Image 1 (cartoon, rainbow, N blue to C red):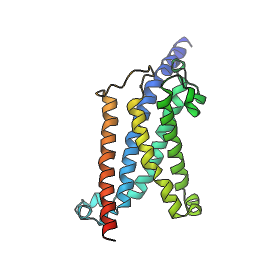
Image 2 (cartoon, rainbow, N blue to C red):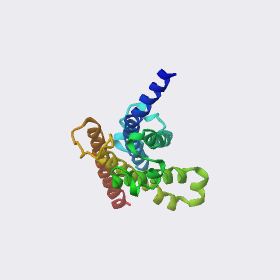
Image 3 (cartoon, rainbow, N blue to C red):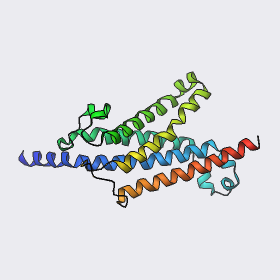
Image 4 (tube, one colour):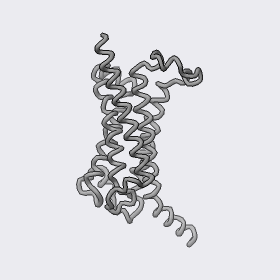
Length: 205
């Protein structure tokens, strides 16, 4: 019994680290999700470079993969959130996560994470077929654009939040932060390319 209790205690202590891993995983998956969404919105398979892709890649159902990555990201975000209060050392309660204004650590950065989580939920809920049909394509599209903001907020949250919850300044060359920086760079490049495509399509319309 003593051994089991000790193991449970060690597990609780490690939930903070595990929560950080899940949060970082969610950022990576969300980045992939945004890129896939942009590929769909530009009908990439009909572009010059799309025709040059190997047949195996062109046969991938990007639409389903886009949806799958959204649900996968949501899973990791929920796991990231649920694990934090399990470690008493964090001083977080679930209320601090729902209403993070008075969170015990980096309240502003936690608020950014909470807002991005809410935005992700809104995007996923409004993408359900029944809800999407009732909203109409135009309104749904405007709401779906929240996904861009969602991923940016997740990257900012990941960059500025101390993974050990000790309110330390960001170590920009830390491996975890570098991964978030790479995600941010990928998103920036994707946004630029998507905007260029928008300008080109409107000029030829």
